[in-house]
Length: 361
Ligand SMILES: C[S@@+](CC[C@H](N)C(=O)[O-])C[C@H]1O[C@@H](n2cnc3c(N)ncnc32)[C@H](O)[C@@H]1O
Image (tube, rainbow, N blue to C red; front, side, top):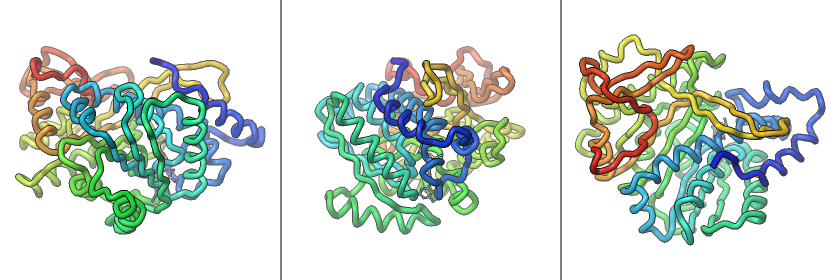
């Protein structure tokens, strides 16, 4: 399955054609300051970012649902309640819906989509209406937009969830939580700690459920914050685990060797590392292109599983002989084992669970 849902692109194409001819789509659609985007900037993001986010989200969820134990947990649910943070026009939300279409039929899927920019949220709602009106959807998907600006401590978000989600829907916690490309946004960067996000996930995710956090992370990026996110994320996850030792319900499965070394007291083996990411290639059609083309983006993905299931899957990832590819700078891949002293016998991607099974574990 290479091509994304082409019907959405017809809509985006129409909006794109309404932009002034000299509009700087590439520049406007690639900033880290999107909260106050104008309608034109939102269309620029739809052109530049939406297809990649869609594809990346689809890939991430397929990797998770391909795990037999995760799939059977979700198959047993009639309703899947999803919380998606800072969703913009919803590239990540549509990727999730698409992945659910591949793995499930007849489920009720409630997506509570939180975004601080009213126009972006409106464009997401419009795209969603189009998506469900022209596609044969095998699940009953409902999108509930929640207009809220995320801020320190997430107090305002918790209030909004109480009013618009927990009370009216009788929900206590979520079955999936996701946040794509948001922690480096100008409105958040600097005061919001990954640590607080882990706490939030721990409090709001049911046991044996999944959560995803994905950021653009490229050492060659013009945005300095992109260089640092991987290191911050892993360091603060280790801090969080130390603090909640024993009571910790949340297990991060990727990036596999970095997490393992930090939790096993071997973080000194990571000294000198500038950060880890991997390049996701997607064959997508951008609005100004006539045909599908390969695009590439470097991303950092943390895949979480809560409760005993998370701990079980983490154990199956503890293969000392696997060298995990953690970065690829100037075409030079770097491979890390769980313990730097162990020689690489096999190779795997540090961000992808792949064919993890009970037998192989
Ligand atoms: C780079 S876009 C990512 C959109 C989407 N998650 C994706 O992957 O395609 C970042 C989004 O975060 C939103 N955002 C930025 N700061 C925010 C805040 N403090 N509260 C809520 N949303 C915020 C922006 O409006 C924008 O839509």
